[in-house]
Length: 132
Image 1 (cartoon, rainbow, N blue to C red):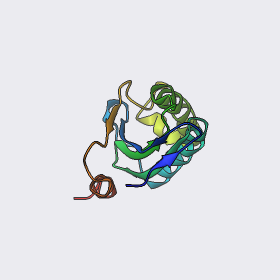
Image 2: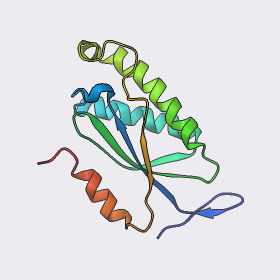
Image 3: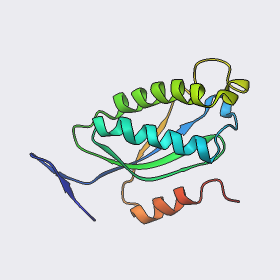
C-alpha cells in the first residue's frame, strides 16, 4: 500500500463516493461525465482530494478518491454537488427537459471507506459500471 504524507502525518485514506441523479433520471452520458469529473478535480484541489478512479452509469457516478486527514469531506461533497448542479444544467441545457428544478443530484450521497478491500477490487468494480 502506498502511503502519503504532509507536514504532520502519514496516511492512506481512500473513499468510494456514489452520487445519484435526482429522481434517478437517465441523463449522464460520456460528455456530461467528463465535465462532472473536471469539476470534481477542480474543486477537489482546494480540499486536497485526488481522484483515483471515476466512472458513471446513466443515472449515477462512482468515484474512488484519496484525501488528506484534514480534508473536510462533507463540505467538499456539498460544494461539489452545488457547483456541479448549477454548471452542468447551464452547459447541457437538454438536462432541463428531465430535471426542471435546480437540483441535479439527490440530497443524499453514499460515502464508503475502502476498508480492507484491495483498491484494485474497488477500481475494477468502478471501471465496469454501466456494463451488462
